[in-house]
Amino acid sequence: MKRLNQKRITWLIILAVSITAALIIFVKERFVMNESSPTVSFVQDHMTNPNGTLATYLQDASSDKADIVAGREALSESLGLWMQYAVAKNDQALFEESYELLTTYFLMPQKYIAWKLDAEGKSLVTTNALGDDFRIVGALLKAADQWEQGREAKLATASEISRTLSQSVQNKGYYVDFHDFANGKGHSSDTLSLVYVDLPSLQLMEKHEMLEPGTYAKYESMLKSMPDDGLFYPKTFNVATKTYTYDDTVNLIDQLIVANHLTATSRKPDKLIAFLKKEFNTRHQLPGQYKRGTRTPAVSYQSTSVYGLAIMLAVQSDDPKWAKQLYKHMITMRGLDANYPGGYVFSGNTHMFDNLFPLLGETALQNSLKK
Figure 1: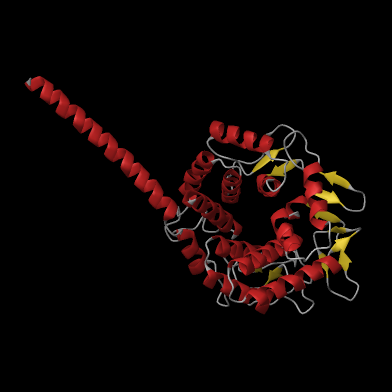
Figure 2: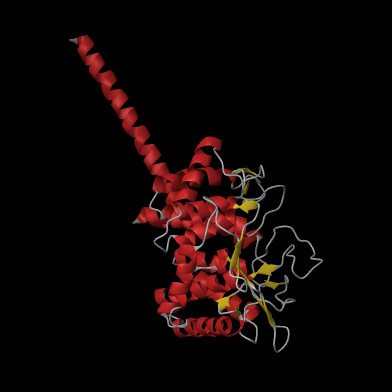
């Protein structure tokens, strides 16, 4: 009888310990996924210029050429990603700060967005960047739908930018990567990078009647019907020759941006997802670039942007298990430099998008777990 009681007590202790361990794991995961990301503080404390613009790099440096970004110069790309984060986090105050940066520094008198500013907020370029423009317009329209305060002003700004894109940043009936506004006539690219075909933003522009009828359907059809090489997507579309080009070395950031946009269509990026999941399970990481011909890594480094974008793709594809695996791996690279907690800093430096894409992925996962 005594032995039976001891066995029963032992069994109860084991059961209690198991339940406690499971609860700790559950609570820990919930806490990690619900806390405010330390990356936000890193961006605000270390990657923000005195005028409020977001620096491209942590360490200062000078740029020798106008089309090369260096040091504390600010990009419209960073502004758009930061605005997307504010909307996703439902942080109206942060969005208002970003909107003021847009209208004060980035929006030129001709109503185009300068793609780059110096650290003081001056534009030394006369060109835009289509993908950044779409991202910003999409964020403005989401904000207008989300918050009543300042709605009309945001809609007016989005409309002005959209009109400029339609009137000036087109060639042969297609949006193109950029237009040079240096003189009256200007010059437009003959290339459309497929990462710039931002279907979610175009969909919002159509909803708010900021596109010519049929425009969204045209670009949706483009992504649905574009070729691939059996796995990877092309890099660009030439609007003059109507031909696609591929890079021999494939950047996973580009592939994942296109894949995320594809989720808005009936053509799902299943082959790319299957490949990335297999690579992650086999290598326990995702190298930043691959050789297109052999499907093997072209580099040894990892890109935190790749993980942020892959998390977003996993969330869009309703695959929370994979999203959590990617997230847990991604944050092992966060805060490695004790001087910059919350930042993805390596060898004393970092690029802004290697912090903002992870932040967007993290937020997408958080929001999906709350549902």
